Image 1: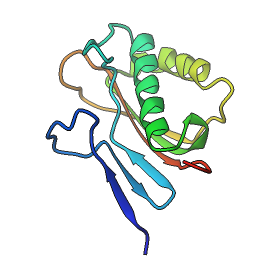
Image 2: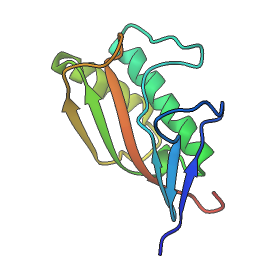
Image 3: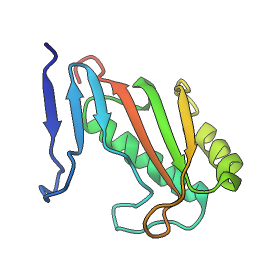
Length: 128
């Protein structure tokens, strides 16, 4: 039987979801959004993509993983017109990492000015 570990949010605030779940060596972080540590959401899809991927990387590192250990991603975008800029930014941010398989889904919208959310499945790295 695979052991599940639920990772609490670092601020211990009560939320409707855990920060991440570890299932054996698999990492399932919660969906990441383009809000920085100051609570700000950038304006452009380029900046939002960078912040979202930075947030994802931070969560993976907490769980003993990294961008290089992602096995699958799902990206939610609000606007099909954002795809080209998001994809170019994506390629820049993943330079030096294997490009993981991804699915991009277009959705009706998010709360506030957010235009992207990313969910991932990754593998914990040795010693993680």
